[in-house]
Image (spheres, rainbow, N blue to C red):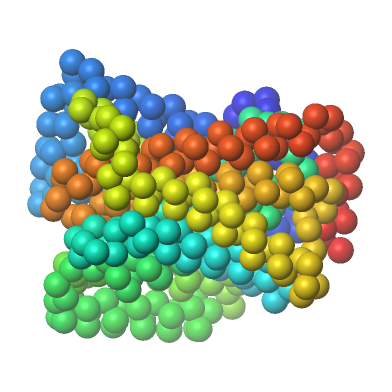
Length: 409
């Protein structure tokens, strides 16, 4: 972890009230690793080694290509960790009460609807392009927290908590969107098998059984069923996460916490960077202002930049002004606006939805990748500039801890 990441996040984990703080620490540092992996993939894809890069990703290991294993296999583990964190925060953490969920929850909803609307303004007339409506609707929590960590003590800790909570709810929304809108031809036999396994997993949960090998073994079978069902296999990770109990009748360590602790280093530092390396590689040959003005790219870029930033800020401002919401402790309105723009960094989740939206259409997938990269970069730049200019005097560590403590009361 960088010194900046340690200084801004470590004060958040002094008190063991919520595992969200530890999750944020690893996500922030992992975002920096992800950035390096994505840049490396982009550089190689535009170098003399490009042919080797793409051929490597198309290598078949058993029934699937390497890229397929990454997107359907490794990403199921990513969604498993996301699901564990969502469940924990909903039961015991920063999202445990309706009042805690209000601002980030409605902000996340606005941050999904507004980008989708902007995208469809440009692409509603083409049924193929219209399938990409959800591409700009996601926030990359690792990249976003990584960016805040680089700003160090200039960012109040309460804003990092707000961003993490919003991104977690945003991920839940993305999971629902993927399940409902981005499946293939359904295989009812495999769907039935997935339903039986799901029922058995939650029966184990209600019985208080906490054996992780049993849950994970059934999770593998569930993943195989979804892989062949026409519903994206990553949904298996989420269902498995929600079935793993926080507490068991057997006593001892929490199964949910145990699995979360095993994954929270592996996923942000290895799995997600592998995904970024494999999916960020797109040839920039032939990219021009004309290609950037393509409705697909305009919808994605403006969706991420304006839809996310202004959509989240506008709805949250209305809640704060008229419905009893509270601005994150110690933050100014301009700082809050800066963090809302940072939420427009959609990289990992946007690339993933892009792959599902235009499956089998490599040209369209590559075209959209350019919009995703540019939209995420523009959001990062605008958010950083606002936060930098409005936070000329870094907060002291005592200020950060005091702000965070006040936010918990």
